[in-house]
Length: 357
Image (tube, helix red, strand yellow):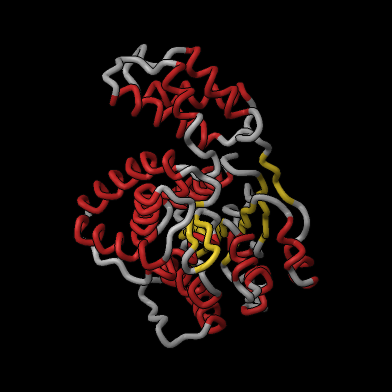
């Protein structure tokens, strides 16, 4: 779809592309890799081209926030404090034209934005060339990534018209595909002979079948945490019993990547919630109890935690936390006793990341 854009990018009008597929089917990694490849080929041709990837769960809480992020990534020298959303888009196009620069934009988790924001960004971005009607605007492509087409019902007819209904479908991974990925990853991550073919086959089977349905991130998590369990128990090999034990406890819809993608405040609030639930041996706890545990974690991690209520609400919007009321807050569809060890291992990674910074 973009094989010819580097032949004469000045004549390329924006091309919208949709990528649709279930959880863990490689949509995001493929898009990011494509953007890196396009930038590399452009550099070889001495063309100034930048790919900006945006996870709308993380950087797109609203139209103005999104456009500010795009503008700052493309042209960090432009001050955006006093600009409206429309003005930021205009400055973006003006900057690209003045610098003979080109931009590829990728928006991930579009359904999340459409469900939680009342603003319509699809119309703005698919018709951005109208800001520079005399020639192409410099934005050569818009990649929209989603888990399905349900969000179409939230689009206006004009948005649907400019976006189109053609998309690239990413089917769920098959047993053989998951096995190949696991073999490649295990060869890099484990000592030779630590993971047998039987273990790889078992993980591939349970990950390809319902309810996981081909989510390769779950397969990788299952391999990772089975390895952690084997290591903790002093075993030199990962056994089927290790995998079965972890498989019975890890909830497939909350992966390590989902949690690592959270802002640091939300990771800590999530840990505080899990610890509070475990201590009380209850399905739900109150906001006040979570806040008290956050204070302890804040002192322990030497990090000031702010906006705990916002963090809980945002994780609720993402389907990680279940908020019934201010006194009934839990973790969505996950037995707390099973998840606490999982989150503890995640927080170890967070501590390591914070120490490096």
